[in-house]
Length: 84
Image 1 (tube, rainbow, N blue to C red):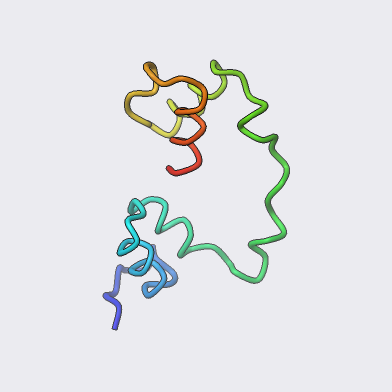
Image 2 (cartoon, rainbow, N blue to C red):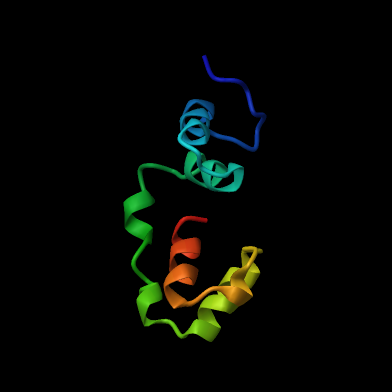
């Protein structure tokens, strides 16, 4: 039985599974709070990170408070953003 993480987490069981898989608290909460009936309908509006400039990738990493971003190359930034 999953712990109750309070009203901020909609699906406690999914949140626990994601945390056990090593996902960050933020990412696990984001996924656990997604409305599954419309989740697949939303994506695809933003270009692939592969098409972004290093400057834009660093700015996005800054928005997400990813540490070490200033020393990362493009591939490392893309990996960090995709796995945040």
